[in-house]
Image (cartoon, rainbow, N blue to C red):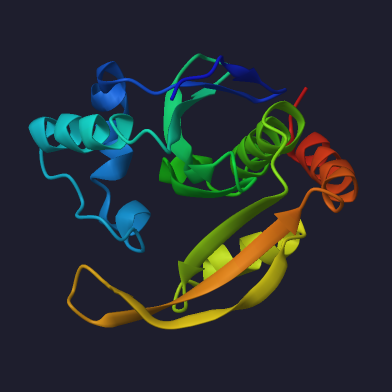
Length: 194
């Protein structure tokens, strides 16, 4: 499933391709960036290409590379996945950014663009995000973004170290989107250097 680029003030989300592997590999191979990801961290460019290829063949996924507008650098990736148009729902995930971009406008604006695409372009009724119960940084980010905590799926999946992970779910509904969009616009504007 493909879509056009999504343009913001600080980033452009461009349809992901295997050609982005080289640009994404440094951040994806960073153990701290990849710490909470449920899939194995790529150890080589070949593994990176294989991972992207696997993501791209999923018909219920729209994958994007995050390109910083200031210099055109690819600084991360994000996806809509488990996209079910008939049910009007999707999740946002497989999101990571180069550590140098943490705390800037990039994550918030990427979420703003993806949520706008989900609600305004695709007409979805619900978008969810989930995180590891130990990933407090992600939980704080979702709360700051204005997402609603829905609950915890206990012992939901296996972490890379073999331990069991609880997954915390957050969401936003279509009727909540206009208010959340306004908050995200203010947040992104405050973090974007003109």
